[in-house]
Length: 253
Image (cartoon, rainbow, N blue to C red):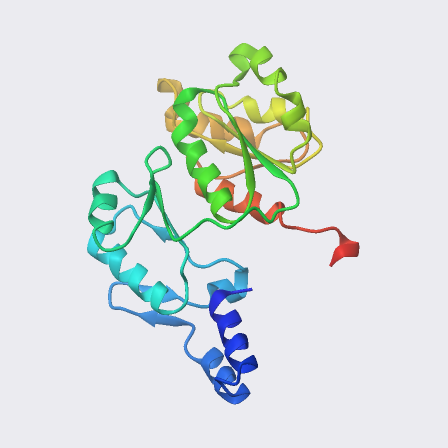
């Protein structure tokens, strides 16, 4: 349940707010226009998770303004992606940040305890894919998921991947992250009985075309149950994996 909705319900229960006033508060505009940004305040109501701040291209002052607005409207835990170390240092002078440099992400507030139905495995073909993998892992953890990291388990040394079959086969979702020819997703897809989210990265030599080769390979995967997100889109993979990991069976709904 969204934080501001929970607070409204508590205020009604405690007699601090009438039902009519609570309904009025919910009917107010679903966003706040602060000039350079329109903050989506009802995203948590619609999707179950608050808006995420995309840090690239924003000044520290703009990021601070967005955080101020979100916190003023009851959003106490905020994820910022693609945030440089320099911008994080500037924002941290105003708001306390948990900055994850490898992921280029920062968290305002405290990550919630895992509430998903199982584990998300994040696997990379190589060490060079770790920045994208960390973005996926931090995003998934931020949204209440337990994450297992399997790094540098690419197909060039298949025994490295096979040494982690227990982790792979017990996962609810696997995020397979690879550049070069992007074969890791197909291999994992042929081993597990859960959804596999493939993330092509821009890692590779000339003919990899900054990730296009891996993207096309993953889109053409012969393994069933493999879906693909955009090149280097660790955030999108982590968010989607978190949604899948929170889906309950039909009888539990």
